[in-house]
Amino acid sequence: MIESDTRDWLEVPTDRGWQMISGATRASFWLDRPERPDPRPALVGDLDTDLLVIGAGFTGLWTAVIAAEENPGRRIVVVEADRIAEGASGRNGGFCSASLTHGLANGVARHRDELATLLTMGVQTLDEIEKSLVRLGVDADAERVGELDIANHDWQLDQLREHCDTAAQFGLPDVLLDTDAARATIASPMVLGATFDPHVMMLDPARLAWGLAAAAERLGVHIAEHTAVTGISRSRGRVRVSTAIGSITADRVVVATGAARPLRRRDRWATVPVWDYVLMTEPLSPQQRAAIGWSGREGLADCGSRFHYFRLTADDRILFGGWDALYRFGSDRDVRYQQDDREFALLAEHLVQMFPQLDGVGISHRWGGAIDTCTRFSAYWDLGLGGRVVSVLGFTGLGVGASHFAARTALDLVDGRDTERTRLSMVRRRPLPFPPEPMRWIGITITRREFARMDRNRGRRGWWLRTMDALGLGFDS
Image (cartoon, rainbow, N blue to C red; front, side, top):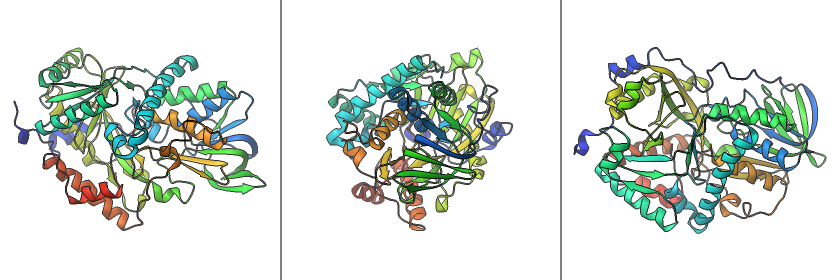
């Protein structure tokens, strides 16, 4: 067996990594395709509606679709500052997980008393997404193939065993694969073992968003792109939303703006944007495809604190992302951070470390994007303006599946319904806020460095991370 100290991921890219990314298109592969729909016209002038949804990513689109299906006569408008799925929804890996709590360990740590309910709701949500794609006629290349979480070091095998033991306590079907079984599935020298979670679906995120938008319009929803919201206020018992070139008066408003700067001031303390980076390869040749195994087409992730996620596309490309999650001082969301040459070159090195068989593979696309992160790592809901406005934020990179649950819960809240979802403490409680700058940047930077140190120290958490755990604070990718 390969010794642990030879299995560390490179920290500095070599000439090979720089060369691999040199010709890649600087755009999200998902969005850089001819089938991308033309943008809908912007909203001009004043409009009156029953329900306004701000943001045309997964949460906003699911909100519109669910609301229209529940009440066909309801007037529903969706406004998007940019284009559909231009934010995190069009830049992610397409892992649609049943987890509502950003994984089992985080659920145990933060929501143990109601975790059994949340796990059941999560599987029900994944089932409903699968059924909805069929019912709505959305072709998102969805494959319910599960996810393998991989141990790269011997000490991580203990973490996987602990995970499976905890999963068994809650009746989850996760199973442990030893080295031989894991390598029979994934032909990589970096694999020492894995756990398999069947409750994950891989899909094309852009095609999901485009399909939901088309389905919403068939249901009577009006969608306006390039319509930025500039303010939200009360207006004679209703809500007035100002835009750059008009206004909308609505009975109810759902704010689903993801990693964009929050519209409501109190949400600016609860979330921060962290930057994640992704590569997409050219389609693999039949020989390359055979050399790496992976016949089950599962989603893959390694289980370090700084981790990679990777998956196969419908045309047998490999999406490879993750590792660093970078925070920019002042919660800076400038689009220039969508490109970071060093991050891409390092990812290319790690791809070849994972699959030496793919040395020299072409990289077609390279992109980055901001993720809305909160201190509990999973979505939260915030009511305002007398309960007429609800915001949903903080998914922390695991929102493809959770967005459906978040949307349904947001509608319950904004419509004043008492349901099993709205009674959850996860829904009723907000996460702890982040501190102001410069303490925010200092704290996040130290935490990132401590996560890296933890991986070098065989998973042992230092005093800083233990203190963050005790305070209920966190930072994750």
